[in-house]
Image (cartoon, rainbow, N blue to C red; front, side, top):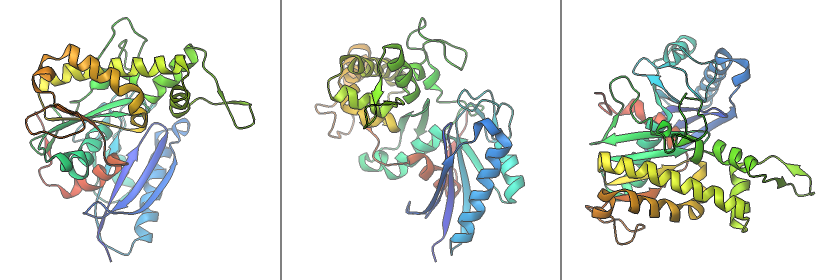
Length: 328
């Protein structure tokens, strides 16, 4: 028998529910598409059904349930406010609606906060031995989570860390958040696919027929030398570099971690990203390590995530961590 928590990662594309031990061992996982077109009640029903399935399959004590959701979120209530990547979910009290279905207490936080917490507890934060870090999650959108002095910093109303919607080019493309030129419009998987379409890039399947573009297939094209695909990842690196320069200047943290599926393309965008950070952040120039891949105490480090699925692990571990959240 192993005691366990349940972590839920609510994404704009996929919904994942996992049983995780307090040590971070994953015992069981259910993955299914997020049925956005069917509406929030259908998605909540899928969550509740999956929780019940996992509880029935595990021979142990359920210690708690944590949910990570795209924001903006009003915390600790768990109310969604115009989430760009969850259309139709505005005003939904995610926490209350899920508790009503499963008759158990639930903790809700932003997916990016929980990815940062998972990476802090089990990944780069643990490896580097830091007490503070910032994580940018590069997936369907771009999220941001901040750990300050071992705690999630969620701000006055849970909206801290919305750096994905910080503009890197005010004349750039319109963002679903209502602004223009946000980091999310350059560094997310969605942005990479959109940009590939703008540049006329197409993908071919094994039989030569047209195949849907993905951020991964665009990265494959860039790796094989396609100049337009390489241009896209140069743009990704520039946008990340500008955003990180501002974040480093503002926060002066020891560690900035990039998480999510786009990070698989690190060799394609990281050189441009580091060059822009060096150019645009005097704080980074003061504290940059001699070798970015080697941790040096007292230096500013930018690193790829070390934990797969840090968000779902962070969601599962959150109910166990008394005092893990700090608000303004």
